[in-house]
Image 1 (tube, rainbow, N blue to C red):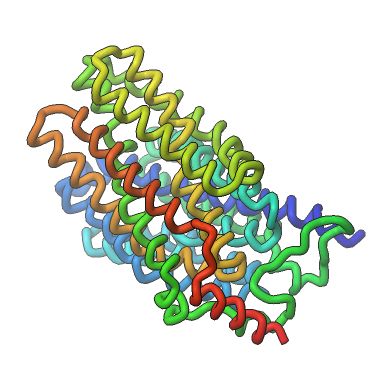
Image 2 (cartoon, rainbow, N blue to C red):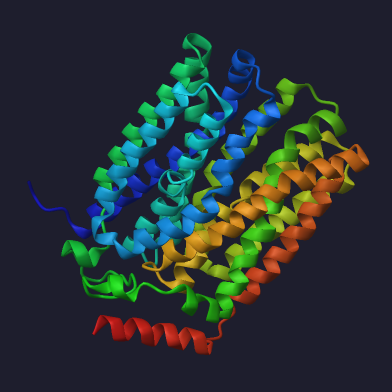
Length: 426
């Protein structure tokens, strides 16, 4: 078999990263098990939902751990991903056999170890290793997988639950997660320096932290990161950003139903349009980032969200609200495109999974706080308009933090990290 060229391998890594990111769609399908499981066993919905919360909160520990593993053992990333495919199958198989709440809780906590593989962490890390100037575009195509996966898992698992019951539904998740993750493991590749491949003549040189196969030693430490003011600032982005992202996801449908008196089916249709627009515009943000730079991409994301949220808050027109929701879909890409691209550029492709693992803690805190704030706003006001004013304010804060973080100024910490990597590459 003819050896793959650098570009061919890079393209396969994008496809593999896309598949890994689609796997994150299973988290959306888990809500489909809520009613059938609680109906059969008589659990309260609140007590049963704790297993989803445990899956998220245990990720605070699993994301930093696995992020360091991805970086330190990048040479063996295919084997690690194949092991994760088998582990995912085991977790969902255990779900299908659960009959007590504590069993669901244990399996939910176990599933947190799978999230960095089938979410965005590993997929983004792999494409970061293989791209430089086109990294943001590659990341944007990988990010589309989250939208595709959400629809795919929801449709397939929903059909299986309706036709064969929730036990078989969990088994379908096990099979799908195993097949998709295992296939992705065959397509992705360790960083170029481990494969003996180099960019074609004229291409920009790939820098993933070091140019030697022993570059695992150059993986940045938590102590080095804490000393870097950019890291401390970038941790605030998912903290504030995920609050407004979760507010958006939680508030669109009830806003249409409560504040604009639309039928559930109409609201669901508008939400579907929003999801399609979001998927289609991810490459647009990737292109803006590549062509015009970080600042332009940050402003694109921030201006669209802030303008659209204020339009919803101040307008009583359904047409204006729908237009604003479509604009939000075109700009709501902080978590899946904008932040991964910035983190990879600021800290290096090799260090991306490490940094991503640590800031994943703040993702979890922000994501867990957003729904609580949204629910409290509605309880106090009886409307979801205030939620969109809150979204605009939080997005403004996030935008300023990002702009300040990416300012063109090399700090002492930057120089220390550069020197650290240069010494490791000798």
